[in-house]
Image (tube, rainbow, N blue to C red):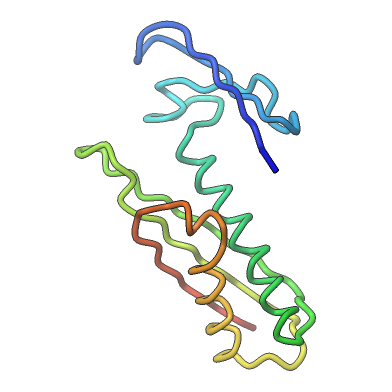
Amino acid sequence: MKRTAHAHWAGTLTEGKGEISTQSTTLNNTQYSFKTRFADGVGTNPEELIAAAHAGCFTMAVGAALSKAGFTPGDLSTDAILDLDMQALVIAGIHLELKGSAIDGVSEEQFKEIAEGAKANCIVSKALSVPITLGVSYQ
Protein backbone atom coordinates (compact mmCIF):
# COMPACT_ATOMS: atom_id res chain seq x y z
CA MET A 1 0.00 0.00 0.00
CA LYS A 2 1.27 3.46 -0.83
CA ARG A 3 -0.08 6.82 0.36
CA THR A 4 0.94 9.99 -1.44
CA ALA A 5 1.00 13.71 -0.90
CA HIS A 6 2.30 16.58 -2.99
CA ALA A 7 3.79 19.91 -1.98
CA HIS A 8 4.64 22.90 -4.13
CA TRP A 9 6.62 25.96 -2.98
CA ALA A 10 7.46 29.21 -4.77
CA GLY A 11 9.59 32.05 -3.46
CA THR A 12 11.85 32.73 -0.52
CA LEU A 13 11.44 31.16 2.90
CA THR A 14 9.79 34.16 4.53
CA GLU A 15 7.90 35.62 1.56
CA GLY A 16 7.14 32.52 -0.46
CA LYS A 17 4.09 30.32 -0.30
CA GLY A 18 3.04 26.87 -1.22
CA GLU A 19 0.25 24.35 -1.44
CA ILE A 20 -0.07 20.83 -0.06
CA SER A 21 -2.39 18.17 -1.50
CA THR A 22 -3.13 14.61 -0.45
CA GLN A 23 -4.10 11.56 -2.45
CA SER A 24 -7.54 11.56 -0.84
CA THR A 25 -7.96 15.26 -1.75
CA THR A 26 -8.85 16.06 1.86
CA LEU A 27 -6.05 18.55 1.47
CA ASN A 28 -6.37 20.00 -2.01
CA ASN A 29 -3.92 22.80 -2.75
CA THR A 30 -4.12 23.78 0.93
CA GLN A 31 -2.02 26.86 1.58
CA TYR A 32 1.10 26.85 3.71
CA SER A 33 3.69 29.56 4.26
CA PHE A 34 6.27 30.91 6.67
CA LYS A 35 3.44 32.63 8.57
CA THR A 36 1.34 29.46 8.85
CA ARG A 37 4.39 27.58 10.06
CA PHE A 38 6.06 30.02 12.43
CA ALA A 39 3.41 32.69 13.19
CA ASP A 40 -0.33 33.08 12.74
CA GLY A 41 -1.37 32.69 9.14
CA VAL A 42 -4.23 31.07 7.26
CA GLY A 43 -3.36 27.58 6.13
CA THR A 44 -1.53 24.56 7.47
CA ASN A 45 2.04 23.53 8.22
CA PRO A 46 4.05 20.31 8.33
CA GLU A 47 4.18 20.18 12.13
CA GLU A 48 0.41 20.35 12.64
CA LEU A 49 -0.02 17.70 9.96
CA ILE A 50 2.38 15.41 11.86
CA ALA A 51 0.42 16.09 15.06
CA ALA A 52 -2.88 15.37 13.30
CA ALA A 53 -1.54 12.16 11.80
CA HIS A 54 -0.23 11.04 15.18
CA ALA A 55 -3.51 11.84 16.98
CA GLY A 56 -5.52 9.95 14.37
CA CYS A 57 -3.24 6.92 14.24
CA PHE A 58 -2.92 6.64 18.02
CA THR A 59 -6.67 6.99 18.65
CA MET A 60 -7.42 4.27 16.09
CA ALA A 61 -4.75 2.07 17.70
CA VAL A 62 -6.39 2.51 21.12
CA GLY A 63 -9.74 1.48 19.62
CA ALA A 64 -8.18 -1.57 17.97
CA ALA A 65 -6.37 -2.58 21.17
CA LEU A 66 -9.56 -2.21 23.22
CA SER A 67 -11.41 -4.44 20.74
CA LYS A 68 -8.60 -7.02 20.79
CA ALA A 69 -8.80 -7.07 24.60
CA GLY A 70 -12.54 -7.81 24.41
CA PHE A 71 -13.91 -4.34 25.11
CA THR A 72 -16.23 -2.29 22.92
CA PRO A 73 -14.59 1.10 22.36
CA GLY A 74 -16.82 3.98 23.40
CA ASP A 75 -15.74 7.56 23.06
CA LEU A 76 -12.03 8.24 22.47
CA SER A 77 -10.52 11.67 21.93
CA THR A 78 -6.84 12.58 21.58
CA ASP A 79 -5.03 15.90 21.45
CA ALA A 80 -1.50 15.71 20.05
CA ILE A 81 0.78 18.56 21.12
CA LEU A 82 3.92 18.77 19.02
CA ASP A 83 6.82 20.67 20.60
CA LEU A 84 8.81 22.55 17.96
CA ASP A 85 12.12 23.82 19.34
CA MET A 86 12.59 27.08 17.45
CA GLN A 87 16.20 27.50 18.57
CA ALA A 88 17.40 24.13 17.32
CA LEU A 89 14.73 23.85 14.59
CA VAL A 90 13.80 20.32 15.62
CA ILE A 91 10.69 18.57 16.79
CA ALA A 92 11.54 18.05 20.45
CA GLY A 93 8.67 15.67 21.16
CA ILE A 94 4.96 14.98 20.99
CA HIS A 95 2.56 14.69 23.90
CA LEU A 96 -0.63 12.71 23.41
CA GLU A 97 -3.53 13.55 25.71
CA LEU A 98 -6.17 10.80 25.56
CA LYS A 99 -9.65 11.00 27.02
CA GLY A 100 -11.87 7.96 27.02
CA SER A 101 -15.38 7.25 28.24
CA ALA A 102 -18.30 4.85 27.77
CA ILE A 103 -16.21 1.68 27.56
CA ASP A 104 -18.11 -1.02 29.42
CA GLY A 105 -16.06 -3.26 31.68
CA VAL A 106 -12.65 -1.62 31.32
CA SER A 107 -10.94 -0.36 34.47
CA GLU A 108 -8.93 2.85 34.53
CA GLU A 109 -5.75 0.78 34.99
CA GLN A 110 -6.58 -1.46 32.00
CA PHE A 111 -7.39 1.61 29.90
CA LYS A 112 -4.04 3.22 30.75
CA GLU A 113 -2.17 0.00 29.97
CA ILE A 114 -3.94 -0.36 26.63
CA ALA A 115 -3.19 3.30 25.82
CA GLU A 116 0.52 2.84 26.59
CA GLY A 117 0.64 -0.15 24.26
CA ALA A 118 -1.09 1.84 21.52
CA LYS A 119 1.38 4.70 21.99
CA ALA A 120 4.31 2.34 21.49
CA ASN A 121 2.78 0.44 18.59
CA CYS A 122 0.81 2.87 16.44
CA ILE A 123 2.33 3.22 12.98
CA VAL A 124 3.06 6.95 13.32
CA SER A 125 4.70 6.51 16.74
CA LYS A 126 6.98 3.91 15.21
CA ALA A 127 7.92 6.32 12.41
CA LEU A 128 8.97 9.09 14.78
CA SER A 129 12.32 9.31 16.55
CA VAL A 130 11.29 11.91 19.14
CA PRO A 131 10.16 11.43 22.73
CA ILE A 132 6.43 10.69 22.94
CA THR A 133 4.62 11.24 26.24
CA LEU A 134 1.07 10.30 27.16
CA GLY A 135 -1.58 11.58 29.52
CA VAL A 136 -4.72 9.50 30.00
CA SER A 137 -8.04 10.31 31.59
CA TYR A 138 -10.96 7.93 31.76
CA GLN A 139 -14.48 8.68 32.91
